[in-house]
Amino acid sequence: MSALIQVKNVTKKYGGLTANNDISFDVAENEILSVIGPNGAGKSTLFKMISSFTPTTSGEVLYKGDCISNLKPHIVARKGVVRTFQETTIFKNMTVHEGVVVAQHLRAKASLAGYFWGSGQAQADVAAFGKYADELLEFLGMSDISNEQASNLPQGSLRALGIAIGLATDPKVLLLDEPFAGMNHDETMHMVNLIRSVRDERGVTIMLVEHDMPAVMTISDRIVVLNFGEKIAEGTPSQIQNNDKVIEAYLGSADDEIGI
Amino acid sequence: MFHLTRKQLIGVGIFLFAIFVGVPLIIGATGRWDFYFTLTSVALLSIASAGVWLTFYIGRINIGQGAFALIGAYVSAILVVKAGWSFWLSLPAAGLFAALVAVVIGIPILRLRGVYFAMITLVLTQVVTLTALALPITNGARGMSSIPLPSGVSLFGIPILPDFASMANTKLAFYYTACVLMIVTYAALYRLVNSRLGHLCRSMQQNEELASSVGVNIAYIRVVIFAISSFFGGIGGAMFGSIAQSVYPSSFQVVDSVNFMLNCFLGGLGYVFGPMLGTLVLYFGWDLLFEFQQYQLLIYSTLLIIIIRFLPNGLLSLRAYKGRDK
Image 1 (tube, rainbow over the protein chains, first blue to last red):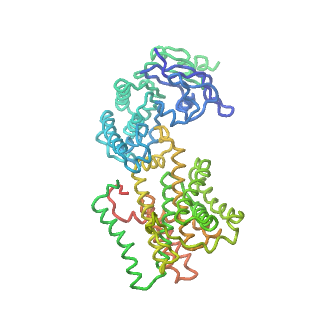
Image 2: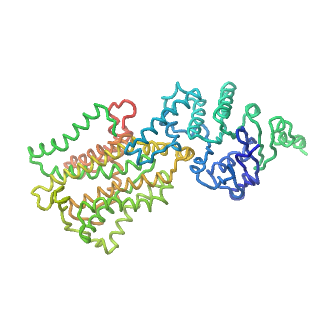
């Protein structure tokens, strides 16, 4: 098992508050790894540090052995580690197709001046972007809403659009922020299958932050559990389900229960 | 390169015919020669407004274009008067210098968003005015006056541009020059907005975080756009100084900066040609209300409030555009 991403002793402090304390784990290539934990456990902060949206206080994140923490988000995206956001973060006033075309910025071969003057390479790029967007939307089963304004889409489609925008960058690692939040059972299962096919057919390593336990247990190869900023467990879904510390974090310990 | 439809081509043709042939014919027939100066001003102000519109396009409210127009006017005047440059060389130099200043100022302030950015740009015009008052090279409050008219340009002995000083009718010459500059500006703006850079700007306008997550270097693009915007401001200002043959620290004031922004609002932030229409309506609207004497400002501002309230997408939104036609 070769580690694609290594999180090494990562700590994040906001003033006196420790959001993440000395977290370490590896993500293998082609793995689906979930980060779970109760509210305020520091999951989102961890994701922000991996995608360099916020600097670490100490520790570092390695991708293929290179440090990717404490850089700029667009540089990390260029290396192939791309995050998606929750559904409200979308290009609202663009159609689905336009959004996916814009997101292919990293695949551009012509310079910005080339696009301005309409060079041959730029025209080839524009044609390629359109074609790839069609392909990607078909792969995600979104061809029928290709020309819809993003602001008119229902929640489930917005989530899928978020993933489409992330995939348009041709990532090696995709970080998904709560991809199942607010979905009913059928929508969740549809999304689970979609994420699996992204991994299986496109070879994208997936990390996700999620609250929906049944979905996490179904989709994950491995799970990392955070509580109060500390990593309390790591393992396969069945190991996690039987881990005492995890049960305690979620349900409270037996002692707490009776107030001793 | 522009991929215009037949209808758009006809529209552009009519517009070009109107400003290059129609207007001079009408002015010749009616004898209202003062209209040349008014229309020349509109053309130049709309160049500066085009720049403001572009900063709106990356989601920044720019109330500082007067600063860059003033910088452009001074750079051109100093190069012509003190260094003996040809005006036609000083014009791009003025634009480039304004762009350079925009890069230096823009790197720190473009991190700010919304009202914070707007507040800082609001101060810029005042800062440039005070700088012009203080520096020896700008002659302080006396400003630069009796700037020579643009000289002729010839390449390999073939005259390309005539000497303005030897002309009987400089008004017409300045009018044509301003119109050509305006058309080049708006053609470039149209092309920019419809090319990839424009699409990236739109993505940043809608969500900077998401744009950076898909690999867009948002800090770089913000600075590039602000520099282009200020280039337009510098060109407009330099041309203005040349027509007036003088530049003073008060040539462009905070109120001018506000007007550049209003031109964009009035014409429509969603349309490339919005600022052009906005400048025309705002400039003429003010003049037309002159008869009302002391009530001029009151009526003018009331009308503006009503228009912005009921046409939030600008005057061009009155036209029944199909889809997003830019």
